[in-house]
Length: 133
Ligand code: ZN
Image (cartoon, rainbow, N blue to C red; front, side, top):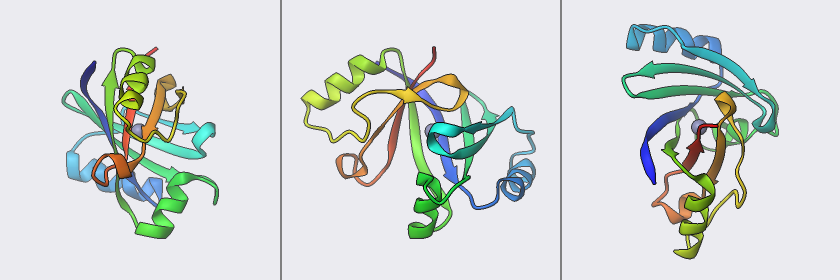
């Protein structure tokens, strides 16, 4: 079951510059910043009400974020939905014929279990499922 929008991911070239931009824009300070080695990204989150804005920059040419920016430029990257049971959701979506990028969840930011759904199955939007541990 989907519980809420966990975060909106925004791809940025320079995390420090984006942080100061969003500090001014939202009049908030980042709630946390971390490096996610699995996805080769640095992430900085701002709590906005019940959800979060997640600024994400690549730390290597192999990072999906670096590749995304090279192809499409900076901007909205994905929407993450918080689910109560990510394994059950992946099975449910698979049974509907939805194309998954991750058949098995992996560790994402904030030590959540995450899995991505291919934009070709979602009308062009990269969707992330996220479950708190
Ligand atoms: Zn995300």
